[in-house]
Structures are given as C-alpha cells and as structure tokens.
Length: 437
Ligand code: EPU
Image (cartoon, rainbow, N blue to C red; front, top):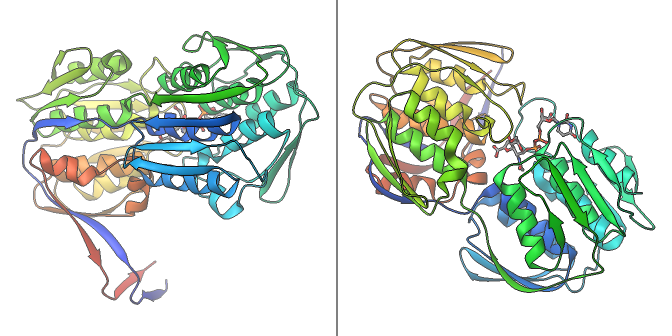
C-alpha cells in the first residue's frame, strides 16, 4: 500500500444528480466507427473530398492531426464538416505518439499501403478490452502481396504491387474487413473477402469509397468484391451514417430512467437487435424509419443477452444494457462473446448498489430496486456511457472520472443529456487530490 499525491493535476469529472426521467428529443451524431475509417480512407484519394455529419469527438480530432502530418490539407467548414485535400501525401510514417492513442489507427496501414505501397505506424492502442490481435489484417495484406513486419511498438508494411485475390477471414472482424477493403481498392484485379463483417459502418466505408470512384460490391453481406481501379478522384461530398451505438445508448437511457425520448437522425433498421432487447425488457418503441420514440413507465424485466457480430446484439451496447438489467425485476445473464475484458463496469455498478457477479465472459445480474450515487471510474468508452445512464437513474449524486474515454466517442454527451432533463455538469477539479492504491 502506498499513497501519492496528484498536486494541481487537471481532473475532470461529470457530476450527476439522479432521479429525473429523461424526456424530449435528441439528434444522433455521425457514427464514430465509420468516421475513424472514412478519415484514413481519404488517403486513397488523389484529390479533394468533403465529409459531413462528422461526429465532433476526440478520436476524429486526433485522426485529422495524423492526416495532416502525412501531408493532407484539412479545413473545417463547420464543427461537423471538413474538406480534405489528399492530393499530396508527403510522408508514409505516421507519428507514433498519435497512432498509439487509439485502435482505429490501424486503418492507416491499409490506406497508405494502397496509395503509396509503404507505411509505418505505431502499434494501435485504444480501450483496454482484452487481447486485440490484428492477425487477420496482416493475413489480408500479405495475401494481397505486401510484406509486413511487426517490430518493437510499430508495424511496417511494404508492397511493390498489390494484386487482387480471394481472402477468407478466420474471424468476423470489423477492422480487418475494412482494412482489406482499403488495401485492395487500388490493387490490380479483383479481391474477394469471404466471411466479411456486415456492420453498418462497413457499408458506409464502401459507399464513401464508391462515391469517390471505387468499385466495391456486396458490403453488408458476408462476401465483398472489390474490383481494383486506377485512381480515386474524389471531388464529392459524403455524409456519414448515424451512430447506432449512440442511438442505442439514448434508447437505454429512456427505459432505465422511465422516460420518453425521441431520437432524430437515425436509421432504425440498424437498431433492430437493440430495439428487440428494449422491447423484451418492457420498453415501448415507435419506429418511424429515420427517427424512433422509446418510452417506459414501469420497472424493466430481466433479459438474457449474448453479444455477436452484426446483425446480432452489439458488444458496444453491452454495458449500457447492463444498467437496465442491474435494476430489472429478476435475474439476467449477459454472455460477452467478442471482448474478454468488457465487464469492468460491473464493479463500478456494484459500488452503486448493483448485484452483479462477473466471471470470464459471463455476468449474472440480480436486479435491485434502485442504484445509489457513488464516485465511479470509466474503464472504457462504453463503460463510461453506461455509468452516465446509471448516474441519471441512481438516487443521489454520482461522480464519473476518466472522461477522456467518453470524449473519444460521444459528441456533446452531457449537453445532449442535459437537454433531456438530466442534472449533469462537467467539473474541472484542480484541487489537490490524495489517492491510495
Ligand atoms: N480479432 C482477431 N484478429 C484480428 C482482428 C480481430 O482475433 O485480426 C478478434 C478480436 O480479438 C475480437 C473479434 O475478433 O475478439 C472482433 O474484433 P473486430 O476486429 O471486429 O474489432 P475491432 O475492429 O478492433 C471494432 C470497433 C469496436 C467494436 C468491435 C466489434 C472500431 C474502431 N472499433 O473493433 O468498437 O467493439 O469492432 O464490433 O471500429 C467501441 O466503439 O467502443 C469499440 C470498442
């Protein structure tokens, strides 16, 4: 046991006074996981493009810095739209300090390999969800003709020429599917990806690239065919798909707080597995195609959940649904089949009075009548979102720390919740704090 001081360190926290049912309308932002793939995809364009409905989040800002360091010229037209000129890519060496900050920096590999035949990036970082191998990405690049070396803390890939081929993915991987698409768009001949992931953001990346001049077919199914083209010319505007996980987070908040929320700017088809669970726990859903109303007047019921690749229930909604199950009537089970360490939030919910036992990939939720406010720590992006919902539902005051995780993926989150009636403020706590560990 030792004690140390963080004198004068800038600590930010969210302070939430719980107990208000959320009511009103919220506009869903563009999808983070589409944005962090479409930004590096611009490296394939020998020209200019405009991206709108871009979520204003820290992952996007870091990506823009990385692109600028590689020679891209970026101008912000408004907080959710940028114009990028990638005519002159002057470097293939992505700054290690930036690429290490998040997972999606691995898309630089596919993009620069495709455009320049050479790339060096720092080992991708990101939320700590357990082992996050990239063997399927590397398998794809090598099949296309690249040579890849994984060194101390970085990855280098080179290719004199990339040639289309058939690639069977051993695991359904969002990142590997997109990365192989990126590497093969300018390759010679046709690439076929079998057992591809089918998430909406994969379709969005393919639609973006096709708008800029690529020839990609079948995105959204498990077989994607990419006919290599000579050049992407750009000269077009593309609007990013709405974020289905942000939408799901507000749907959960409506049910957990016994509120009534209408979500605008969403594609309800992408929300089907989430909607089904919301209805199973007792939420009432009115689906209008591009908007959705969710309300609930009573205590939620128990439900069992197994996370699966799309169109299954998304792992990125697991912790938010866990908040509903922690206060539901009866005992529920969640089986997490994608990430091995995604139950860290359950310890924080237990600090708030929940009764959750998590072991390995399974967690058992014995529903309690209420949660009580407590100081809690976000362990990853979605855990942070779940804790906000828990704070809104709990009796008393909740303080949430580690906001950098939440800011990576949710645009203006406290403002959006505040507009729905939540009592939530962000506090900069510059005072001397004492920690024990
Ligand atoms: N996997 C491998 N080898 C690989 C790639 C993946 O074994 O080469 C395994 C992973 O360990 C995992 C499974 O395959 O068990 C699925 O991983 P996937 O590659 O699909 O995940 P990812 O591309 O790294 C994206 C999202 C995650 C989301 C997952 C699953 C981005 C930037 N990240 O990660 O989003 O959880 O897909 O849907 O798109 C989040 O937004 O909070 C987040 C973590």
